[in-house]
Length: 426
Image (spheres, one colour):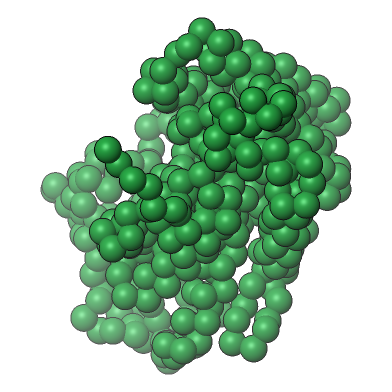
C-alpha cells in the first residue's frame, strides 16, 4: 500500500541525491579504528579555550594522562568498557583559571555508560555566566510550547475522531500516517531542495492519497466482509507495525534534521520561539478553522456529521455512507500528514515519530469526547498544555505520563469526556 506513495517518493529522492552529489571514497575500516574506546572532552573558561591542562584517566589497573591542546581538546584511549575515574589537575590550569567547584575535579565513568565507543566529560571553569529565568518567564515559555504542541496533536486527533465517528474504528496506524507526512516533507524539502511550503502541499496531497488507499485497499473490503471492530482494531495494530518498520528500512533509524531555514528565534516579550514553531501554530489554527467550517457549512460536512450520529438513518435518508467514509479517510490522511510536517519542524524526523505521540492523540480524543471533532480540539489543547507545563514541576521524562494522569482524573469526573454526550447504557 505504502509503496504506491512513499516508495515512489523515496525512490525519486534517492535518484536526485545520487545525481547531484559526488560520492566520497569509501574508507577502509580497520579493526583498531572500529574498536577504539575513547574518553574525551574540551576544556574552556567561558569562551576561552584552555590549553596545557592535564587530565588523568584511571581504572582497572589502567592509568594515562592527557594534556589539552591549543583547541582545549583532550582524549584518552582506554582498553575496555569499564569503570574509570577522570581527574583534572587544578595545578596545571593557567593563571587566573580555576574550577567553578573545587570539589568537582574528578568525574566517574560507569561501565553501563558505554553505549557508544566515545564518552565525554567536562569540567566547568570560571564563574557561572548562565542566565537564569524566573518562574513566570518559564511558565510563559512552557505555555507557548504547550499551545504549539496541542495544535499539532489536534490536527491528527481530529482525523482519528472523524474515522471513529463514521466507522467506529480506533485506528492504531494513525501515527504512521503522521510519520508518512513528515518523511514526504523531508524528502522534498531536504533531499530534493524544494521550498518547504511546496513540500508541505505535496505532503498534504500525498497524505490524502495515502488515506484513500488505506480505505480502498484494506478497510472497505473488511467492512463489506462484516469484520467486527475488535478484529479491525487488531488489523490496524498490525498495519502500524508493518508501516513503522517499512519506514525504518527505507530511511534508517537516525533522526533526520529539517534544515529548511525556519530555525531563527523570534522573541515575544519573555517568550522565545522559532519561526518554524510560529509558522506551525498559524497554519494549524487556519486549518482547524477550515475543518470546522467544512463540517458545519458544507453539504459533505453535514453528511459526515449525520453518518457519525447514525449511519443507518443517514443511509435511509439517501446519503452514500461509503462515499462519506472515503472522504473522511482522505481528510484524515491529509490532516495527519500536515501534522507530521508540523511535528517535523518542531522535533525533527524519525521513523517512529508518529508512534511516539499516538497515545497522546488517543488521550486527546478520549478526553474531548469520542466522535466529537471539537472535543478532539479541546482535548488536544488540554493535553498539549499539560504536557509542557508539567515540566515546571516534574522531570521532563515523565511529562507524557502526567498527561495520561489528567485523562484518568477527568474521566473519573466526566466519563463522556469534556464535550462528549451522555448516553444511556442498558
